[in-house]
Image 1 (cartoon, helix red, strand yellow):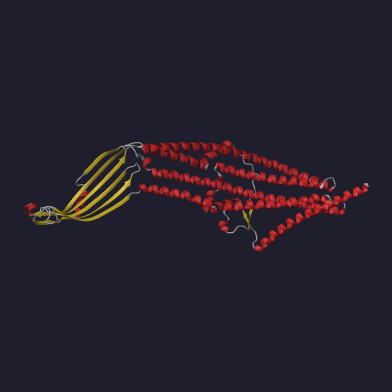
Image 2 (cartoon, one colour):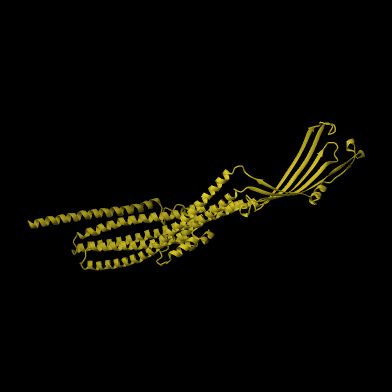
Length: 544
């Protein structure tokens, strides 16, 4: 009876072995078929994967060259620079020419004025040179010339030539006075240009960090895949050894189940790791915009050439903070924003003053023409006995010789009946200044937090690298020892596979810690604002 029960139990065990073996075989077959289908699909499409080896420097250069967001931001400082040029145009002298030719005909209301129609012809032009003064004033010099010809009676000079040389100067003494407010548009444009430049540098820093993070994540994904593949090979080797030992009768068939199940699990892990490689690869392709220069990049496989650094980098919190205060572009942009608000506040305050303007004019007229000589020197007779021709140049000569000197000096005071709008502008400028100062203070507090976290991450991640390296070395020794015990029959498949998993996890964790360390170094460069210098981006931009 006991023997029958033993036979029944044995049969159940062999049935269980057969079922598990069948399921494992099906899983292995399905995974193999899936990989084969993928390969056949690529072969049918006629597209083969192309390996593209890139260093980290290559990726950063391609991001600077191809990244559309960065290329768009490159134009912002150029636009701001043109705004500065446009603001400077205010102080470029302007030259004005005005010409007028007119003829008037009016009815005569007296026979003494004209017989029937009073006709006057005048031809005049003005040439003027104007210049805005940086102190807020205006200087102008003009020359006015005219020719007047009329049929009016009793004229002694007809036609008449006239010229006037005039110099005008005006200068505000209260509102809008001073070099600072006279050049207001240029100062504001310069501030905006510097802000746009710093904003571009901030985006450049962020882009460099994004490239580095994506690059090292791709390195991690590929190394993780290698570890998984190595782990699969170990499981497959153990499976083959199990089969040989079962055939030789030195190992019970049930031991085959654990090895086959582990092979199937590790094959599934490889599929997951391959997907992770593809995800990080696609992310890097987008950041560097590889399609810009290579077109369709779906079948291009990026092979990183650089290996993560294991060199320790020691930097203190105070040193990192002082560096960031000097070189963080976003912090400098906020400082420039505060300067802009301070200037606008000062200007708004200046606009509350009365408008007092000093004016100075100096002019020199000249006149010439044909002199009419009447009978008995009496114009009433209306009889012209002689005409003495005059020259146009005589009038111009008198004007430039300052033959007739005239000048005028005055002050003009303008007081608005109400300055509600001006006061509102002043209040608004004060609020914006307070807002900008609060933003600067908040930015400095955020900087303290970011620097502290970045320095701490670098230190902790380096220690993690050392600790996980020791753990991996220990896992290797434990696996080696367990394999030796298994060979002499003192261990089991389960324990060997467990130590293999421990080694795989230790290797993966060490690689992840190493990658985290390198990414934390890149992040420290970003928060300090030195990523551009460390990667020599200025040289890359010049090469571009």
